Length: 261
Image 1 (cartoon, rainbow, N blue to C red):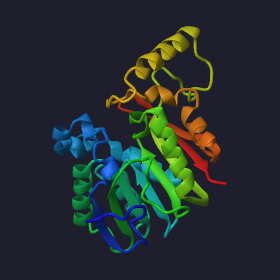
Image 2 (cartoon, one colour):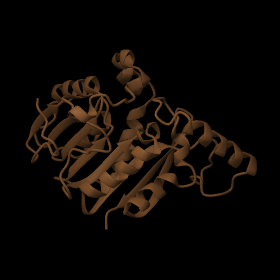
Image 3 (cartoon, one colour):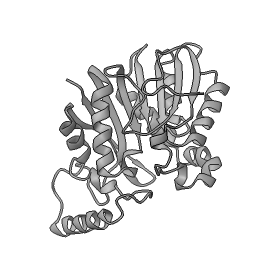
């Protein structure tokens, strides 16, 4: 299907897929599921084995979505969080955006098998987090799960600006992402030894030399010391705070929420 330049349009019941890319996006690098395109057939098997569904359900629970809301899932991959939203709020209007066309096609097949869209709507759009497919002030809630740590800081900042643009006044964002290595239950708010701080600074320096390299966790250190909260606050959102914390594959995961004033 052909995608409109900015917004897939008013929500309609059913499942729609827009998997073309704009000319300015055609050569952009991105991280496929499981880090390599050839591993994609095993992505959902790995998600099941790792019990990622619990993380998705927790994200939906913390978001507190209401019937009929317009929801944008950024970095939706094969649609696991998107489908969790529609299970919890069947009449929501959900848009999932991801740069990986094969992942989106898998998400579409899963959604059709599960008869998604009988009450709500699902639109899947191939695109990037810093060019969100939504009109200004048109979204009630932006979600993102385990995607932000793959993105360099300049793209994170553009993503945050896009979140502000697409959210309606009073709309919210809920982000689930990995905490920085070695950070404690306090979410990175103090309490670290000087040796750890030096190691973190050294890691940030090494990452600067591979700023555009696509890898699994190379930008996770950006989340240290309330990094996600700062990112959202600097973009113009308010009440940015960590709302929950859990372990995923022996790695700390935190949920951060904020609101557009």
